[in-house]
Each structure stands twice: as C-alpha cells, then as structure tokens.
Length: 486
Image (cartoon, rainbow, N blue to C red; front, side, top):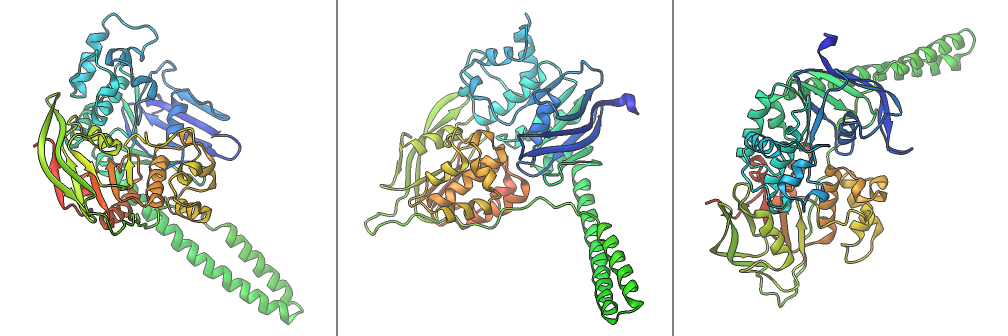
C-alpha cells in the first residue's frame, strides 16, 4: 500500500561531476518496517545514495520523498570521522543534536545498553578499539530513535559475539533499516528485500526476499538472458549469412536479402542487455622481500606482549619467532588491544617485540591511517615502489579494479572498499618481508575475499593476521595463534 511507504525515489539522477554518474532515473520505494540490503560493487555509489537519503546530496533530476515529510533518518557510518576521535564519548553523542537534551546521559545509557557497550562517558573516542567504535557508531545512530536507520558496513571490526548481538537487535527492531554490508551471512539473517545499484547502468533494481534468495534469483535471470541472447545471436548470424548469399545472386533475391538484413537488425535491437555481474579482482601474489646472505632469519620476535584485560593493561610472556613462511593469528574479543598492538609493532615501539634489521613492513591498517588521504591513488602506490615503473603500477592496480579515474582521484574521494583494494595494491608493489594485517576483510566485496585469502595463504614472508571472520581465517594457513582473550 502506498500509505505504507516511508521512502520513495522517483526518477532520481545524480553524478559526482561530469564523468562519474551514480544514479540515472532511479525509482524505487521502501516500506515502513522493512529490512533492506543495499547491494552493488565497490565504488558503485552506495554510500552516496545514503547521503542522498540524509539530504546531504541533492539529485540533479527527480525527487526523494519521506512519508511523513518530517520522518527522521539516522546513520551508522563505516568509520569514525576524524573530527570525533578527540571528543569524549559524551561530546560525541551530544553532536547528534542541534539542542543538547537535559537527559543526555540517560539517553546515552539506553543506546549503549542496546549495543552492549560499557564505557566511560569522559573517555576519548580514540581510546576505544575498532570494535568498540563500531558499537559507538551504531549507538550514535540510535540515540534520536530514527524512523529510517541506515547502516554502512556495521559488522566491520565486530567480533562474533558483536555480530550475533547486532543481528538479534535488527531482527527485533520495529522501524525501517537499510544496510550496506558485504557479510552475506549477516544480511541473510534479517533482510526481507534487496536494492541493487548497478555500477554500469546506474539503475536501481528492486527485489523481495532474503539476501540469498535474491542473489540466486539474479544469477538465474542473468543465465536466462545469456541463453536467450546466444540463441538470438545464432539466428542473427544465420540471417546475415543467407542475406549475403542472396545479395550476390542479384535480381529479385536482392530484395529478399534486404529483408533478411532488416530482420537481423531488428533481432539485434531486441537482444536483452545482460546485467554485468560485479567483477572480481584478479588472482595475485604478494612478493616477499629478498634478504641478504647475512640475515639471521628472524623476521619478528616476541618475548612479551601488552594487551587489555577488563580495561586494564597487562603483559604476558610469550615465545614467538616468525621466519619466512611463518603465519601468526592474533586472536581475542573486541577491546583486548589487538589493533593497538599491531600499531605499536608497525611503529617499532612495542615492548618485548623486535623486528629484524632492514625488514620491510607492510601494514594494512583497518582505518587506512597509513595512507595519506590527501594524496592521489597513483601517488600512494608510487611512493612504496623501490623503482618507478608506471606500467607495473597501472597493471597491478587494474588487477584490483582500480582504473585511471580511481588512480587520479584523491584517496579521500574513494569509497572505503576502493581504499581497501588500494591498500592491497600497495602491499603487492611494496614487496614486504613482514605483513601486519588488521581486519583486511573490512569494506571488501565478498566476491574478492577468496582471492585475497588465497594470496595470504601463499605469502612466503612472515605474517601477523587479525580477523574476526572465521570463514576467511579458515582459508589462510595459520602456523601459530596468540589469543589475547585466553
């Protein structure tokens, strides 16, 4: 029923500049109380669509309508904005309001309870782990009790318990939810509809049903269209071949040939435009640094590690030596300090941890803080290469679906998924001896994950991996595990 529609796009077109279209005459509606997955490949413009719903971006054509007109919209973003990092938790939540309510602390307590997070309201946001910040982002979106809740990759940095709690929360949530996520299991657990943003046609396709059913429906439709086109193509070639034969015989047969050509052209125009599926990155190898003959073989040595237990910093004695081909999994629930430990190792200041002399460290940071967001993609890649080689740079980037436009863009203008693919491109060009990987599946399209897992599994240097995705970890060879939660 029309009265049950809370959000409607009518003939909406939008582009970032002249050469980057996002939507073209898109029309769809979202029912009140529905739970919708927004799909589309990295860089298709899903986050831009969220910004249009929020009113932060205006369409060049068409209209966006909320029912009622004063319906409220809240968003849990992918990552914590830099301007919030040095605010206290209380100040962060206060930023959600034009006029700060007198019962702010009570409201904060309610939403923190909803996301199962305990924290000091006077503590800085940056003092919290990636998983804790993910919960803060969701709580911030909930504090105004919005009619439409937008979730942009909400499972990033969440451990299994956090994902399970979020799923249960969304199943019981009574208002409208639209979620961007590359976690197929998470989406399938609670969604009842799918919006697909096609990066090639810039149209929105709308489907009813849970995530897996819709993905299967799309795959079957594409296969039907391909078979239909194959039959049409065979008939077109047959008509054209016959037309050539009749044309050369002259006389009345020339008119027959003309009709056959026209029939072939009509059939060609009637061919279905098959939707191009999301591309998958090419298989790749992360080359390992070459070590000189005097290297003692110890790439990373740990005798002690510091982490958090019940909010208190503690130290544990360990005996870890990583050599070429050694893969270590750093495990533990959110809030135990895994990210902080990796940051300190990468910076060379971790107590009890020694990196071998002249070892080149490739650090994949979950918030991409190792990449200058004001640089172009091209500069970020060129800066890590030992020798300039534009052909190698561009061909490697192309394997990660980063074209000339992406390389010419500043990194802040790339989608989070594109930043992740850029980070992997950097690792390939860097040729590290030690890989430090902090949640490398965040923001990445699920189609790419098996390819990435294969590359990490085959990596011949030393590696320390942090990941809360068991299916991903299971595809990567792990020789040793250090569990900070044990």
